[in-house]
Amino acid sequence: MTSRVSGPRIFFGIPASPGLVMGRVYVLDRGEVTTPRYHIEAEEVPLQVHRFARARARAQQQLEALRARTAEAEGGSEAAVILDAHVLISQDPDLIRRTEEAIETRLINAEWALRDELEELKAAFSALDDAYFRERGNDLDQVGQRILRVLAGHSEEPMPHFPEGAVVVARDLTPADTARLANMRVAAFVTEVGGRTSHTAILARSLDIPAVVGISSIASALETGDMVIVDGDRGVVILEPEAAAVADFERRSQARRVREESLRVLHALPGRTADGTRVRLHANLELPQEAHLPARFGAEGVGLFRTEFLFLNRDVLPDEEEQYANYVKVIEQSPGPVVIRTLDLGGDKLPVHHPYREPNPALGLRAIRYCLVHPEVFRPQIRAILRAARHGDVRMLLPLISSIEEVRRAKAVIEECRGQLRMEGQQVPDRVPLGVMIETPAACLVADRLAAEADFFSVGTNDLVQYTLAIDRANEHLAHLAQPLHPAVLELLRLTTAAAERAGIECTLCGEAAAEVYYVPALLSVGFRAFSMNPVSIPQVKEILSRLTIEVAEALTLRALQEPTPSQARAHLIEGVRELLPEMLD
Ligand code: PEP
Ligand code: MG
Image (cartoon, rainbow, N blue to C red; front, side, top):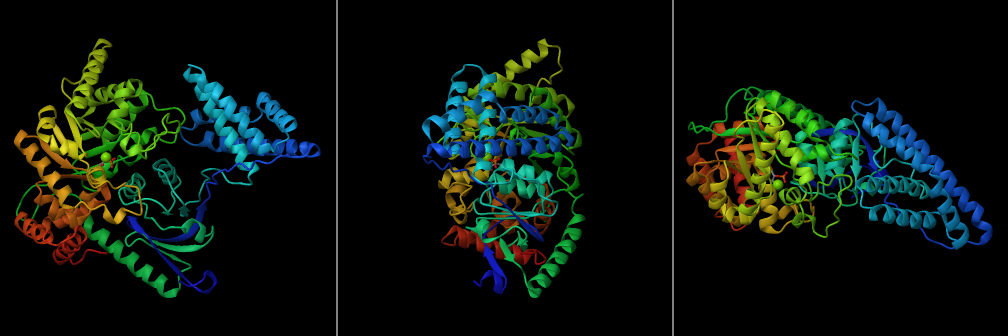
């Protein structure tokens, strides 16, 4: 590897979202605040009090600027009210008096004094049995963190506004961050952490933003202003590319455009194999802004609407009305049925004020488990879905089910909400089909029982791979081991499709594996005839289907699985698919 001054550098990571982009880097320095603690002499007290005052004034300016920007943005009025409150808190007399007293009496620096006062005030607020005061405690903490960031010399916002076309480079981005970046129209992003099926990568693919993840130390190796090529197809980032790399970038970008154009003719055609087997192709959605994409890319409907993304990035959670309005928006634009998944909060998708800090969130209070203990969050969503159901063919889907008990408890809540809505005079269809997500090995192993309780199955391979192989889906160090072709995973998939067939219910695969063209033969072989995926990938899956018969898919899979390892099996399938589809790009 050469040094920065002497030429290009190439960084290799995990291709998280396809596409090629050349642009300027913006390093997101979230500036984790560490609080220095030191004792001071009596004569240094005025200096520390002055530092504290200056930091407060700067924080106030930042908040006022943010407030002005937010108030101008569409739908920003609610956030602007919260920012008004934050401006007031930044000059709160009680906080100022207590912090100054601590500096003076305990002879400690401003950061130490402020941190201690914040802790005390926060503890006092959270001890109060009132949601309003607990919220105030959070507001206070956010403002306090902002002042501490200024004291630590961080000039930037936790998530500054990036110009259109920026390549955002960060140590880590949460799904909530990625959703925000989409609104800013950034061109690409690159992170140190993450895997291909992390929710951040999934969102990037849905939003059609090229991304490379899992490049260690990239945030410190690159600087704001550097020119880079981000190759989301191969998982490569080239710093300050030379003429040859730029020429290659241009040639491949052109080839991509030609390929996209040639796939366009497939948009209107149904999914069908070369021997005429119908394969239904639906779209996964995360945000209501994407509602136009299923029709655009030739999906037959929305196979998975991940509703929890509506809950991220906000201080005040969406109420029933707002959820209802968003569902109606998606239903009205969908070319067919819409599967609305109930909240899959928890794991890596945490709302701003998530009350739990779990040591192992993937195995914690996530998805249906969270909803069943939080009826105040679950019920408004169920009511919103039931109300939205009269606008089209709506189906409800329960995530992370591992036993029939969970399905029965959710059904009881649904029936209660239906009864309540009817008493209020609202129109609710008699039947909204209820599906179960199969994404734990336990669910696969009791699939016959679950099939007796459910109207359809939707198989989530992202989580099924994570829970079967004990591999954190967001961990870049293990990403190469997260193999849907692992025999254990394939066996569980076979059990599930067989149980669905016995029960006569539909079984769709909605994990990211559905969008990888070279897995298609294997997924057909284990019995899937319906897939849901990011809308952008639908045309290429239609294309490979049109080149395959079920017999060829089975023969190819059988041969691939004779390879000793899942990676070799994958390589074999890639080779087979390439032979059938020579025009496929990298
Ligand atoms: C899955 O786990 O495969 C799935 C589709 O759900 P999510 O990716 O949202 O967890
Ligand atoms: Mg899942």
